Image 1 (tube, helix red, strand yellow):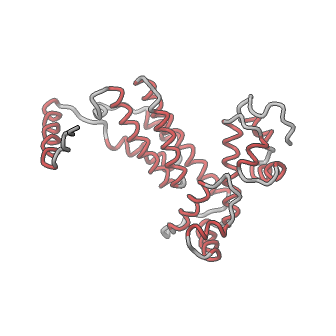
Image 2 (tube, rainbow, N blue to C red):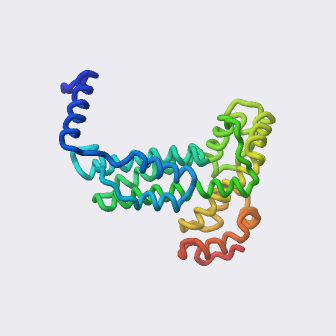
Image 3 (cartoon, helix red, strand yellow):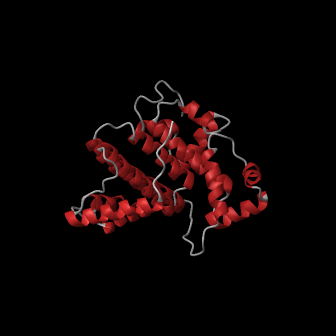
Length: 269
């Protein structure tokens, strides 16, 4: 079966210039770039109030047309917005793997929507999700006593965080991380502590408890199953670590913040 050859660079440029001319002739303008920057900056800062104000602004421009089918066009716009939001979240302190994984999930959910109003509403929810994740990451760093540093972050530390994010269900050891990254464990531990002002083990525990909070809030998994999923050797070890960090037991946390159906009939403390 013969396939139509891909357009040449000259053909692509010609079509772009034709469409620029057509838009100018019709007097059309896009939404202001400054408003987009404000949205992204609010995500980067974890500032939900500023994001809400930015989203509520009115302006004369139009959204771009990214496909002939209107629903597909709106979805493409939201995919671009989610992509930019994920990068803003990374700049704000969210780990690369977490930001990218959230984007993957959001885009897959977006593809299941079959009408434009829900697509537009989903765009806002995606932005709010990222701003809240950044705010939580900043608050966690603040509680851990981290200080903002003028010096550039070491990319090796970011790789450690990404490794931990993708292995939270394991019993993670510093030696395993160092072996995976092909560096000396002592050097890696020193580097991480110098930049993050906590040990790798402390960071692992913090991230496991954060994941545990999410599972208690949004899933129906039993507390025992959550403990084992997060690599704790026993349920009591998870409960003790959770209480030390959060200030209440997993059962109390789920009762306060979680799905009321989750963990029914459990006797955990």
